[in-house]
View 1 (cartoon, rainbow, N blue to C red):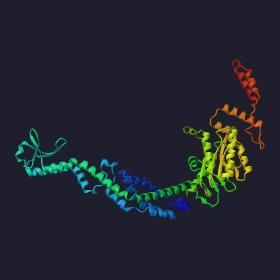
View 2: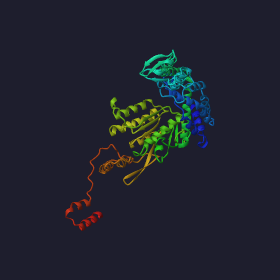
View 3: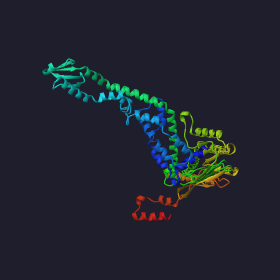
View 4: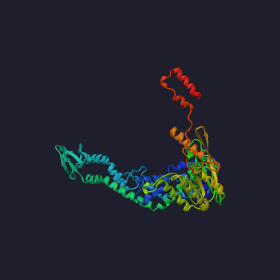
Length: 537
């Protein structure tokens, strides 16, 4: 089984007590370039010199990576080590042809290594050793002609020349050809100097052209080895994934999931892999789904952690389904074919879809495609329309998922009426995210417990968000009036009963006392006495 083999490889790389080779491998792999990307560029003849330099250095590091992975005795790791065999012909070719630190572009020169091409070395010598040649020629011509002040020089206008003063004009050899006459001297050119001039002046251009030709030949030779390089890149990528997964499992305390043949999801101490890395202390939670417990109705306060709980279950299932370790104390999971989510609020105005239309489109996709082996996350379905419509839709969607799709479902809602589904279907269970109310504030415990929530704490969350106190007090009075008007049979408020106008609250005696006082007429002592009376009231 592929997933079991991957798990075994991760466990072997992690080692006992986290002392496996994963740490050494991660350090070595940081030096490896993206060989698959470079191979594609080679196939397209668009690889740059520094791409090839990175490829050369990566190939040279393969024996060290294979040696670092040797302590891991898993079958998959052994297969990957075999795939990391260095392609010696490609490495030798790169070492022989490419400079140690090539230029960024071929047109800049300095890409091909010295000694790789005799012709290129000669052109570079002509370009770089002109000064030494002129000095050597000058000494030789002075000795041959006996002219002590003979000079061999160069300027951009006339090129190379031999300059002889008029005092020594009689000693000029026959093979000198006059190039320029000055007031006190003559400038000459010889066949040897002319030949060197032709080579030297064109050496730069010819060297760049030759380097381009040699580089294209190098790319063509490497193109014949692209298939092997791509295979090598895939092996390195898998080693990288396995080593990173092993390191994450060790550093964050992730567990090795267990696979079951029957349909179930059992998670002990599950955590959200992203959220737990961003908070000081993450509260782990359990989850249990099976043939007789297919839907969890998740209730509780806003900001209490419902969405986090649902998403962490989906992420744990996804990680387990890819053969990776998962953030939990223990995970046991059966076959899952797909994960569907209806989470968050977003519109598609350019496509002519409102927020509610997007929500319903996603819900339709789930209802039409989810199977009894799927995991479904439904978060606050029905919020975008009226209360009656929303509740009716949420109830019908939940019922369809239980009766028809029979998927593993996490259904978060603030419609407490839905919690009664647990009385109608044995596959439905209520869980809630706990919170504690203290005076007018709320403390989120983030612990998931069995049973439905008692309330949503919406007013307390609004206060935490900074909604003005007057608005909160008015909302609380309205809520109390609604609760007093009509109670459902189980003691919960009926959100759909017609609301009567809220009664005016009784006037406090302190207000009457204040109305009878003119502050501008009070003496300090009278004001103090008034304050004491108000305090008693």
